[in-house]
Length: 123
Image: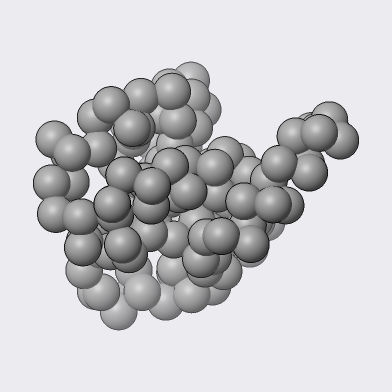
């Protein structure tokens, strides 16, 4: 997908303020049984197609509204992902602004995860 220049500028500025994990690091944590929340911020239709194992869905349109009920601990480790790492970076910044202190965005998103032939689930 080709993104607009202003959107890319916004995401680039946000990336300077959020922490990012690679897909390999996230997979290693999953494989190692590391306890963290893995949150898919894509649209419902994207989630229905496929998603990462053990992920929960909190779309970018509602995550700020629903995060406190889903993950009440602001110190919990949270890894967000989307299609390519753009929406997850934006969502990560918002969660940080809400007081969540251990939030990560997965760089490359599910596209890079698929390209690496890592496992996916469907409902």
